[in-house]
Length: 174
Image 1 (cartoon, rainbow, N blue to C red):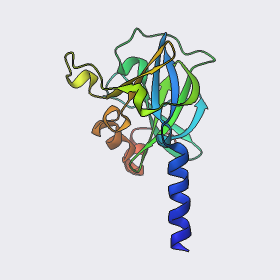
Image 2: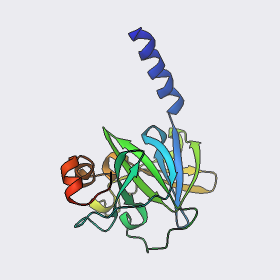
Image 3: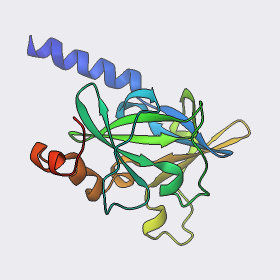
Image 4: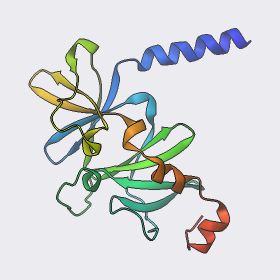
C-alpha cells in the first residue's frame, strides 16, 4: 500500500516538473512553480490586519480557512491600481502555510525546459530581488520566475499561524 502511495506521489511530481503558472503585473510576465499552487480565486472580501507591511492586505476567509493575502504589485513596489474583474488571488502553499497572492491577471500554465531558464542578473542582488529564482525565455517573452519560499517571509507565515483567540481579538472574521 505504502509503495503504491509513493508511486502516485512520484507520478504527480513528474507531471508537475517544469510547469509554471504565469501571471501578469502590468505588462510584465511572472511565473510560479505549479506545485505551490492550490487554487486561483476571484477577489474576496479582505479583512485588514493592523500594523502590517503595505503589501500585506489582510486576510480572507476561504471556506473556513483564514488566509493572509499579499498584493504582489505592492510587494514589487509597483504603482498601485484599482482591482478589477481580472484581478485575482493565487492561493499557494509554502510549507504548511497557505498564502493568497493578489495579481493583476493569471495567464496560463506552461512548461519551461530548464535549458530556457537563466540565473537572475547579479545586478544589486539585495533583499528586494532575492525572491527571483530565474529568468525564462519562451519565444519572444521573458518570464520572471519567483521563488515562493523567499517571496513569502516569516512575517507572512507568522500571520498565518495566529491563534484563533488572537484573530478574534483583532476582529478577523472566521
